[in-house]
Length: 351
Image (cartoon, rainbow, N blue to C red; front, side, top):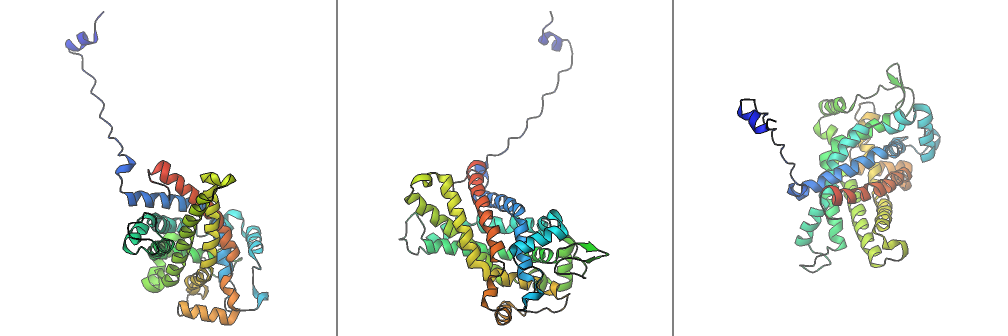
């Protein structure tokens, strides 16, 4: 029997060695803030895809029958009526799930990553700079510091994602069935539909400009994002601490505390941000709803004054129900998912 060494020695070609496969670097080698943002973007995007129908209903209710107190002219009378009518006229997928979905995904990749992913770093920075309610060197930040951290990351994320927000709001507000090139259902009947996300962004910048188009309503958007993020994360963090300190029965389980804190966070965020959310939606949709003309509102304050005068102060909370139906379940999915991704995928500590 001839050995392998013998075959080689008589001139048989050797099989070249397989090239070594480069090792994938450990997750710990990726910068901490980058992992924070990747985890947040993933969690926020997944939840937004799941709950996009509630966002569509909320936007339609907020943008219909503006500056008109005559309820008989409304197309949609309530959250349930709007969802049911859109589903019957346009279908579940095309009417409720797909409108503005691409823009919503792009928005949450940017906005979700910055406002949620940057929260831990911002909290630490503000705790060291302005340790309100806690002595310098104290490990646990004060509640006011948590609010400040949420407001700062929320505002930055809103500015960066504002163009995607404008397109999302307009596509959701105008969505309906199209025949012969115009809408035959929804709020924009008789008007031609906008193109897809990419063409809409290009047309928005070209026709309306950077400031009045892509960054339309950025002030209201910043205020909304600051209120949502600070209300969401500060209440989530604080509720978790309170439940852990008074854990009895099912609350001894960390998973139960996370779900309970997520529900509280959704309620707080939807309530404190509702008026600004309505103003943001109306300003962003203004030029489109006016058929490309100058629009109804000169700015945030003008929109507030005109809305209250024409529709009453409670009009500021239009769309609260679908907003909570989106934010409540959204947070009950996204926050536990974010905790899971941080610990088990991105090698981070819990929030």
